[in-house]
Length: 343
Picture (cartoon, helix red, strand yellow):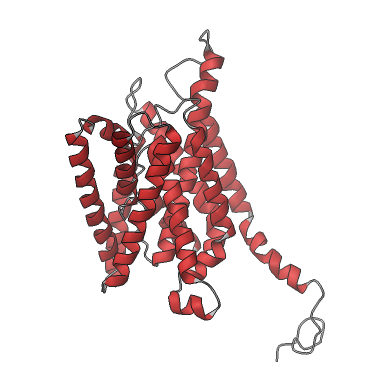
């Protein structure tokens, strides 16, 4: 029996009246640490730097202050919201599937969202932005559920097969979208939608992205449920968790984030894959304590890529999606090789 410093055996000591509250404060103590505060400062510095990077002279121009409010501020807010939402969507999807190689762009969710946006645009040409987002969210939800149901019907001997299946489904959906776009003379518009650039983000157009902040908050609140659901349906049911309801909740949050970001910004490939994996390499797999890190890392990654895109061929811009695809594909291949080596 272990004897504590007080000399009273642990088994014979009465519980301290504040023991429950102390245990409740443990996650908070783990969340807010000095390294996290340093990461917050670094990310904030990148966000501030983004406000002052660009071709237009906001200090010397006659309407510099107005352009700053119309373009730079909305663009930076969009970087923050999109980066945090897509990174956390990838983390939730990896937790529910217990697979490190899945995220919205490797499971076809983004392609389904684009198909919904295309169908709404074709069927209702004058549809407002809210209707387009609703169509993208609905199809993204349906497509993600198809992916989950497909995984339940097949036996996978390797975790690498899961993203391959998702990419195959996404390719099929993308082919259908291309056919519809070609038939309706909207192929160029679809290419612009999937460009993944913040160039067109202006005041009056980015405001729907604030809805993804709800997704971020909901993921924080339901983090423990996602962790238990990630252990499998049998274990989750044994501890009293409604597994199917949690999966529906997670799928809904992923669909909302993916649909809105796809409509407003476009495709952000591999973001939900690289950020959670890099965080897990350094911090382990504790979902709740990793959430702030994933959020900050997602914001920092998108912001850095956007700054590079604005500087590398100035006065022109390289789409963020292109830089993310190059960086993300490198990380994806590295993870695959690492998985094979461990196996």
